[in-house]
Image (tube, rainbow, N blue to C red; front, side, top):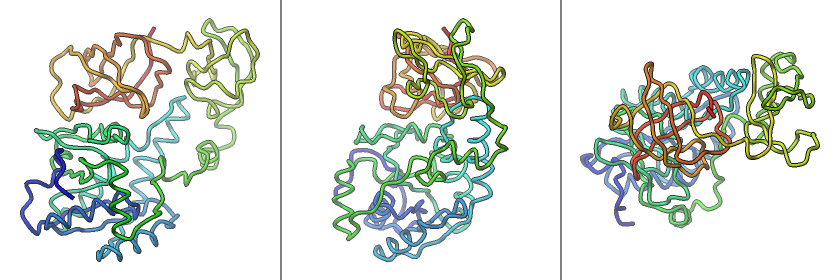
Length: 355
C-alpha cells in the first residue's frame, strides 16, 4: 500500500520506534498494526480487558499470532467501570442518553492505556479508528467519510492528539477488508458500538445493575403538561423515539424530552421535535476556538449530518449553539462536536435544547 494523503501521526517517528496499538483482534486494528510494521516501526499489541467477559481475548491472540506479534493483555476493568460504565448508568437515571464511546477514548485508550505503554517505551498510541491528523496536531476527517469516526474521538485533548496515531486515515473500509484478506484474516467481526453490552439491550443491562424501583412508572405529558398516558419508566424512552408510546392521535407522537425530576415523558408531533439551539457543557478543545463567537458545523449525534451554526462561548466551559436551521431530536447526554471544514475544533456534552 502507498502512503495515504492523510496524516496518520506516524510520519515523524524514527525507524524502530515503538507504537502501542489498541488491539481488539478485528480487521481494523489488525490492518493498523500491519501498516505500522510496514513503516519499519515496532508494534506493541495491547488488548484491553474491560470486564469479566474475555471472549475477545482468544481472537486477539490468534490475530496477533498471524501477524507475528506478542499480545499484551491489560486489565482495565476498574477504570472502565468508574469512567465509562457507571457514568453511562447514572446518565440514564438523569433522563439523558449517553455516548459511552466518546467518554471511553480519552479516559481509557488515550488515558489509562497510555500510562501503561509509555513506561514500556511507546511513543504513540494507535487505534483502528477512521480518522486523520492535521497540523497542530488536530483531528481531521479521514478519507472514508462514510466510516468517519472523529465524532467518537472528539474529546481528545491536544496532549492526547500529540501521542495519537490513526494508520487507517487514508483508507476506505473496502480497502481495509481487502488488506485483511491478504493477511489471512477474513471474516473477523466488526467492533460493537457499545462493547460492554455484548450486543444486548441497554435497558436490561442497566436494570441488572440497579434496584428495580430506580425507574418507576409515571406520566406521559404533552409540551403544555397535559397528561396523555402512562410510561413504563424513563429508561425505556429516548428523545426522538416514535415507536412504543402506545398513544393514539391525529399524527404520530415523538418523545421530546425526559423530565427526570418529575418522572415524566414529554411527547409531541414531529414538528415539535425541532429546536434552533442547545446548551453544551464541559467543553474540550483540540484546537483553540476561533473567538468568543464563531461559525461552525455542529454534529449532535454519531449519524447526524453536521449543521451550520453560530457558537457562543459562555463562562464555566459552556457554549450556546444557535443553528441556522432548527435541528431534530437534540438529546441531552450526547456530544455536540464543532467542525471547521474537515478540522475538528472541540466538543461539549449537550445539556438541553432551547426553543
